[in-house]
Image 1 (cartoon, rainbow, N blue to C red):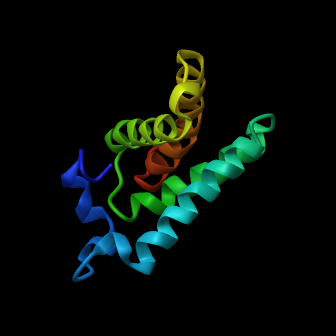
Image 2 (cartoon, rainbow, N blue to C red):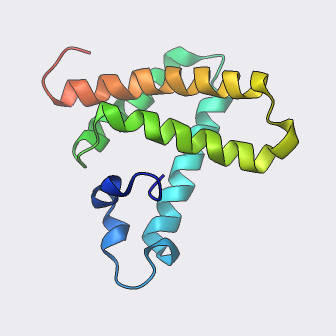
Length: 122
């Protein structure tokens, strides 16, 4: 994400760490949190009504960090790239399409939170 979108580095507090920011405990904690949320989202794929408010709250929280809707596309692309690297040959067009759709659903709720914190109504 940050290699392809260096302008996003300012959003992450761990990038302010002297030395190797990707070795910092803050970075490792953030990565764990991101994949925990993704795992929870996958586990609740059949219950989007319970997942939506959680993602919306995350959007509100991240708006405070300076996140914007236009950042969701590069985040989704980075997620797909990561999944593709891990799945290798098992990353079929069908898998790509399913993850792209799932990320779009997650992004929709997250974006509602970004809007809400701006005083907008979803």
